Image (cartoon, rainbow, N blue to C red; front, top):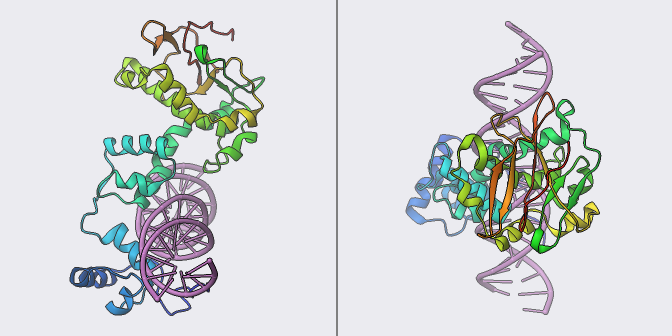
Length: 286
DNA sequence: AAATGTAGCAACCGCAAGAGT
DNA sequence: TACTCTTGCGGTTGCTACATT
């Protein structure tokens, strides 16, 4: 199939829409609807391509568009849905009435992603906050005592698994940030409102970890099945203490207990977070 | 005050899927 | 079945406003 000539070659306008231009598709669609986007600008007398009209309508002119900043609830929804669906913006937008995929995509890239990545970016790319880690390790034990450890100072080799991520950040640590952020919010300053979310059953934990750290990551990292632990940095939450999540055998739930064992590098606080099911764990020596 | 850097957002581009012929 | 056309999606770009040096 021969590609249609671009807008400019057809003498059509590109770039930002004016208020006058906006009125044309609005009144046309009010009268006729938008059966055929390609035909719409011709019939409405607009020097734009159909694609541009469609985009303008969907992202801006639609009457049911919700204006204004995203609420905290909306942001939380986006974060959770993105965790489940990935970059399927239209699917995420479908769950947020009045919000467009483009808008959600922008919010994700400009706000939400940074919130999740920030701690680990410091870990991987900021020289003055870099923790000296003698080795990267990602290990997983058997299903009954699945201690997950991500301790990465060499994330570059993992980037191919997460092409959507900022190349300046560590894929490995970025991936685990989702988990660590949840831990942070669950344990920060005694605010335990998210604890229920983290009180997940063993299988769910396994499932969510499978989503967060897929098998190719383990392989790519050259990691075998042994022990695991996770290291994050966090100067966004200076009041956060070191928490040692200890699996509760009787309830088969994941729970957290504060620990006095934390490390101060001078610039940042660093936390090793252990996810473990089945039995209590021994903290390493720093 | 000017230059430079950064963030936010609207719009564009290329590709793929699905419908129609 | 093959081809054409349209639509929708996700990635990317470029403009503008604001912040910093």
